[in-house]
Image (cartoon, rainbow, N blue to C red; front, side, top):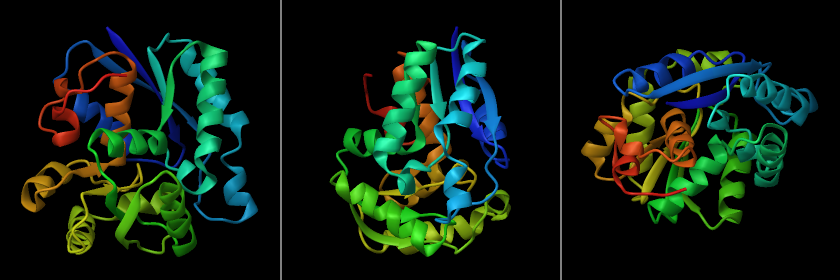
Length: 241
């Protein structure tokens, strides 16, 4: 049995049901969740303060009671808070719980590397200043954004209200820039169900943050991500922790 501990933004309504759906036909893997307060996304002090380490570590410690094999922060805040913030979070989670740890942002970096992607397209619901910071964060890690699309929404609950046709249109628009992969970068912006079909249509990896975080958690837990049926290139290509 593999138990995956997932830390969830409190206003996220996509992550839990979609993760359960992804694992529905996968025997021997279970997902377990803990929440902390996230109500908006922005660069003001109140918004950034939501992602201080203390509440995230408290959530991780509560998850540790169910003895997970890995703990993941299922949020993309490292994209604008900075990679080192997520690395410190993961280091402290492991120190306190003994579990390997990851985040949606760190998982995105590992996915780009695994797929040998250097040029990517970015699709989010975020504000312009958040989008700019995300692009800068990935550029510092060696990944160049060929095109981006965003919705100028401060969220966070509202991100879940956009239908698949809106997200798909954004992905197709960004694909015109000929990236090597496209990231739907937000775990409350539901690209889970449409990503595999868009990948087939466009002929390049479409990486959704909710699915992506589960992928990296499985890798860190020592499982083969290919056990998740119906997924794209990221899940089909052999990988190790």
